[in-house]
Length: 338
Image 1: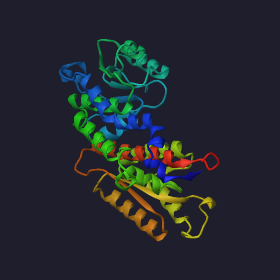
Image 2 (image 1 turned 90 degrees about the vertical axis):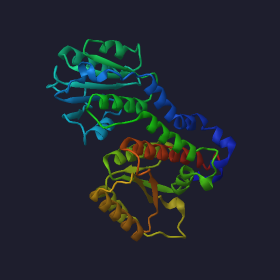
Image 3 (image 1 turned 30 degrees about the horizontal axis):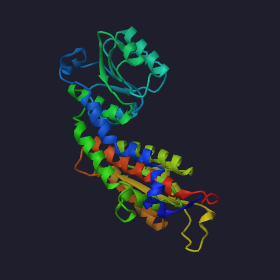
Image 4 (image 1 turned 60 degrees about the vertical axis):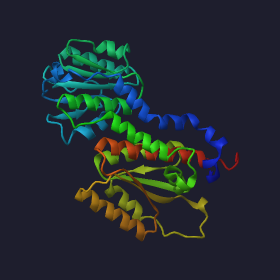
């Protein structure tokens, strides 16, 4: 496949991915809808307001929940990705279920087991869904999420856990504003010269992306971005920590200006920078950048606003990367068809 950058500003070509771009651009709106549908007043005074022995998260984005909560959660936290529940879960524990996308049979089974054991349940699901009905009990609080949106569901659930004294403060409106900001900057109506997502797509046009994020949340965003790049391009895209990426960079051959691009994809280092001043993160970033410069490997930095909170920075990095992947897929054209 070859990359045609004129398609990035071509209204006809852009119309072909309009629904996908709209889905990305309305992330902030979906967060607002989810937050507006959930009443958190009185949550601290409910059964779930008592500090549990342990917190277990199930469902889509349970690991994202863990990445945000672990540094501040005052009780042991587990993101459980295996069928069923840990054997120790009981009446002293709280099970958080993220089920906005549907009533997965494994989640349904886990909810039934949690109810049988007498555990407290915090369930984020669409009202009237089978899983919401399955979870109904005196020890269950339902967060009614009207849309099948995992990110919006996580933001609302984090707000609820903060009210329960189990996590950091998260303001859905602020997170939504951050998503709106990215949507405006990466809008299809902004041309290539002033659109960072289109610029990222051009940089990755003939590349094998190596995506790195230094913090736990930035690394999670890196994995999601790499997945989107693979889907958009049909090419390899690696998201890994510095110890895995450094050998790949060392193996990159020196750039040959006269080489045929068809001979192979050169790596491009994509740094998701959330502004962390952690010593380890700074050291690893410096090592990666220095090696990339020696190996003549291009570096693309996707940066978040340092002054924002953890969740806002995560959303900003994620959305910038997802917009870039969308434009990369748009620009790639099959040589026979094109």
